[in-house]
Length: 428
Image (cartoon, rainbow, N blue to C red; front, top):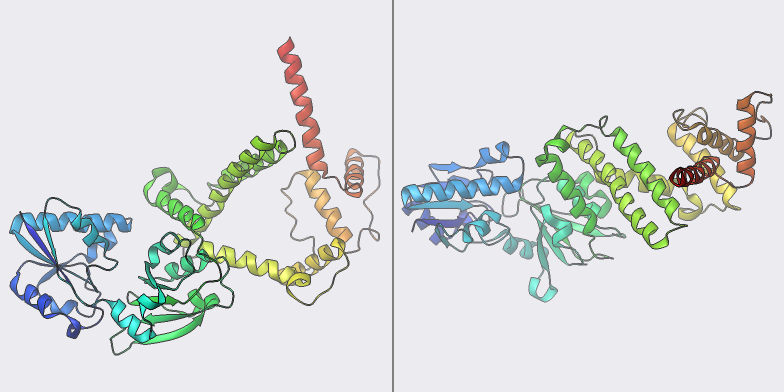
């Protein structure tokens, strides 16, 4: 059977290669490198690299499976080939896992120094005593699900990976973490950063890892698993690949109305209503994550940016919760909200942000609410007149005074009438 000998290049330069690895490199003439982006790659002369695979394939899984296919083919042609990988072949090396499961070839894996050895030394941590776990940054939310640490996170090679890691932790508190970069090299760097600054100040590369000593709450997995599904659909599904922010507009509107329909079921079909609401909220969340995925592809924003933005907005607009501001009831909360929003957006008027494309009843209601919140309603009452618009506006005012949403009230009444008409139609 043809054979593939796998050697590790160690965590840094050629000086950390084992004697066994050097001997294999010298003995086997047909040599392959997973990537030349490693300080010790120069120790494998006349090698064919798989760097072009990373550019040609749409997903990392396709990259790894393509490498395995090429290696198996080369081994069949030459009888024996050498395959050199960064670090240790036994640590976070998916291609080696795939090769071990491939029955077409014999795999010989030579032990080597891992970046973990240098990491534990720089951190001054005994991983056995500390009960530390190692996880891959690309799969952090799923791999670390349910864990509060301590965690050493490898493969933190892109800013998007750091953003996803940050998003996976719902309650970081005042957490400070250690970033380890290029261990064993002249430009080695070990720094402390706050969790909030993780994806803001760190410039990651392929030799970056992260030490998380402890988390206040376990890592959440479900949201990250969902975003991975959306990313894969975008990469591999022909329909999803064609979508744009503009083409998704009608789907966003449809899903929003389906959520409203599910909410209406809550009062009549409690169990079925909540099940329907859960499902429709998931469909609506898909639209949000899809738009965030498009934003990330365009280099505009990520889901982490969306979450951070709404988090910061809510904190800013609720000073009575997050700062030393006292309010006297819900009306003052709304008034503060409008004042803060006006200043935040740099708008001349609190009425500037009302979309004119809203349904007419909802549009009128929003105007009235903002007028009431700013104290303008008593100074500038609704226009008078006998035309139908003024009468409808008066009905909106009555509804607001009674605490009723006129849009919802009319929709419910119309729906009930529709049901009665259908029943009469069926009766003949």
